[in-house]
Image (cartoon, rainbow, N blue to C red; front, side, top):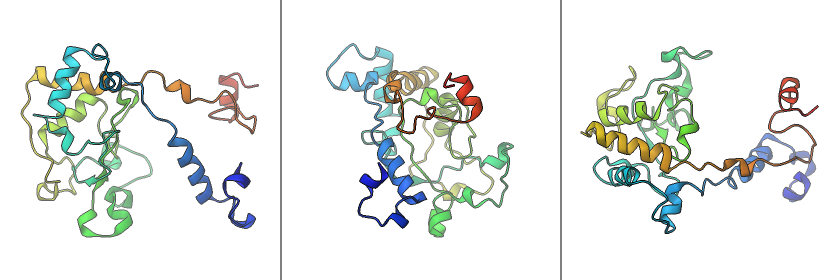
Length: 222
């Protein structure tokens, strides 16, 4: 498959981390969460989402101002913002520290002062399957994330309030409105059928997606 996909490359430059990343990226781009209730509602099914989730959607695109950053088909604007979330070392992460350059976000790559602590806006589908949120895994639930966003205060000792994104402003929602918004994010944007992307087999014949001895035993590949 690599020979076919990268036939324009010399054999000596065909099997590299770069071509592997291209191949994996091409595969990932085929994995589209396009069967979520909200998407079915957009296609014309009026019963696909509940009245509560509709109220959450109205808040998302209105009073809560989520759409300012989360836009487009996947709700990711592809932009970068400073929110002041905690780094992994601050919550007890291993093999990291206050000096870890990964804490700098986009600034680690560009070196520009304006990019320090900026992180990419994530997509929003199937969040209920996530165990942690933000670059430092500092939030453990969608409610934690929403409450942090509504409060709009830096929790990172290295990020001052003046450095926060101009779009990151406090929003006053009632508890009922917060529940509507969370319901929309957690359930209306959840595609329950992502197992359709799991291949029955791979050309190598190896156990998928993991082929270590324990995984082969756990998944009955032996």
